[in-house]
Length: 315
Ligand SMILES: [Fe+2]
Picture 1 (cartoon, protein in one colour):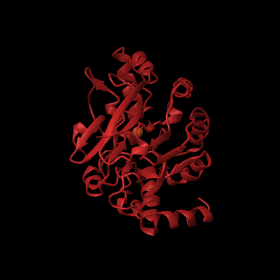
Picture 2: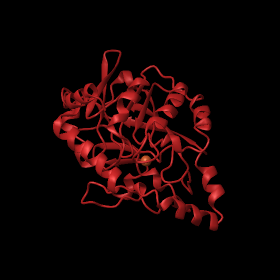
Picture 3: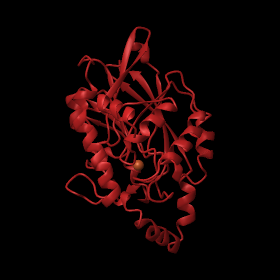
Picture 4: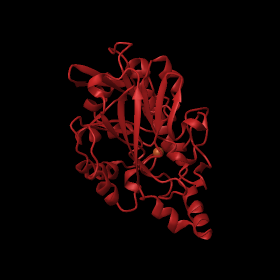
C-alpha cells in the first residue's frame, strides 16, 4: 500500500479501523488465528486440505465433490419488502458471494457462461473474492477482471470485503468498476425514489463492521439493503432498521450430510440464518451458499448458488 492509498483509506475508514484491520491482517498471515479470543479458524488452516483431500479420495467421493463445485444452481428469490419504493418494484439483484475465484477448477469458465444468460439490474458481491485468507491477491484480481466481463447491468456492481480479503485489494476491485463499500453507503435512484445500499467490512474475523458510520447521512426511515459478509449482525441490522440483509460466508456448509445438513457453518449465529432466506423480526435476509469453495474445490450435498433477488412492494 503506497502513501496515497494509505491516506485515502484513512479518510474512508478512520484511524482506529484502519490500524486494527492492518494489524489483524498481519496477525492472520503470521499465526493464522482469528480475532475473537484467538479462536482457530479451520478455513485459515490450509494444512488441513491434504488430509481432507485424502479422506475424500479414500471414500470415493472426490470426483463427485469436485464436479459439484461448478454445478451452479441459479436461485430466483422473490422478496416482498414493506418499505420498498414503488419505482423499485421488480428490481433484480444478482448476488454473488464467496467467489474464492482463483480456486475455481475451470478458471470460471462455466460461471461466466451461466452469468451471461441472466438478466438483472444490479450485481452485488458479499465478500471473499480470494481463495486463501492471506498471500498474493493479484491472481484474484486477474480472475475478477475476466469475470466482470460477463456482468452487464444498468446499476453496475457493488461489493464488500470478506474475511479472505485484504484491504489492499480494494483499489484493484474498484478499478474493475466495483463500487466497494467500507462501512459506507450508496444511493440508487429510480423515478424520484431512493433505495440505499449499505456495506460493512467483515465482522467475522476483522470485527471491522461499523454500521453507524455506514449509515451516516441516511434518513432513519429510508429503505435500506445491507451487504455484510456473514449473517452475524442481525441484532445490529434490526436496530438500524435494515429492510433486507444479504450475506454469505457459511458456504451453506460446503461439505454437508444428505439433505444439505452442514457439518460446520463457520458462523457465530443460529443455524437457521446460515443459508437461504430468513426473517428475524422486521429484518428479512438471505445468506448465500456461495459460488466458490474454500480449502478445496469440493462440495457435497450443497451446490454452489447464484442468486437473483427480485424485490417487490409488499402491498
Ligand atoms: Fe467464503
